[in-house]
Image (cartoon, rainbow, N blue to C red; front, side):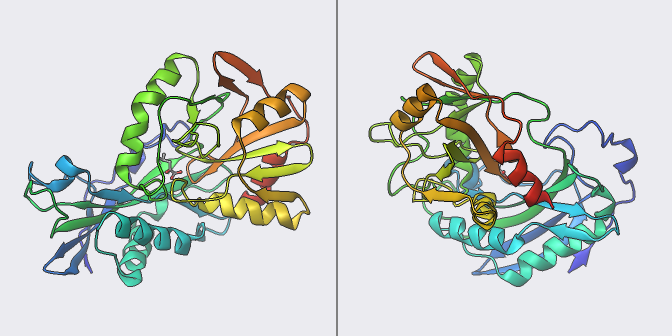
Length: 332
Ligand code: COI
């Protein structure tokens, strides 16, 4: 692999105690190109702007996917990644759905490991600190022919991160008009366009005082799906319920880790359809104890309240919440 190191590290200008998610990037990036049917030219370069043609297909047809993963450093300066093999698998599942050529395990992990070694000082020790790693691939071929491209770029960039919603109370809105994904669509893939399509409905929700949307099924908006940057869990009485993954729900790595951890501590976990009616009813009777989201960026995020048809429903304040207990186990 070709490696060019920066002569001007930016690390001393960064206030690691005061980070906004995704604003500052580490000193280097990994790049690899796809041409003539193969991935080649793996290289690490100083983080910088890149040159792409205005006709690159990604700008016109959105052929792009990404992953999100976190690197941590322990007290002995050892770097840990959280289940990166799962991110690698999902990267190729997403690529396949978008007709993007799959990347080899060797290229993915050589690039990732080398980049993290070089930028290791950007990973800070201590609970709550991490380096968020963003692998992504996009159609770089200069052509606006509306078919899959013949040239792509695979890149990895890194941004030091605290929690995604640092010290914020999270209110979510149950969406009834817009949809995130439909049966047979790309909802299970980390397709860049899935996120773009959420911005407008989320903008409306934000103006109404919410941070995120609970997406419901596109047919009748009654089955809960996910929240766009996170999967959702509901504690009703003493059962933890989460929607089963499907072609419209992302197969979250934190989601499956939380299910495994909850089962280990003998929590009754149900992966089944959960409806808006069930949430409303159990909230009214007091049986709905907690809602929390899970995802790489948020890790485990307790929800304070949800809104539905102009009514707000607050979750009780709990001393022994499952969300915090499971988050601690996950971080440990
Ligand atoms: C992640 O948790 O990695 C996500 O995909 C959320 C991101 C869009 C901020």
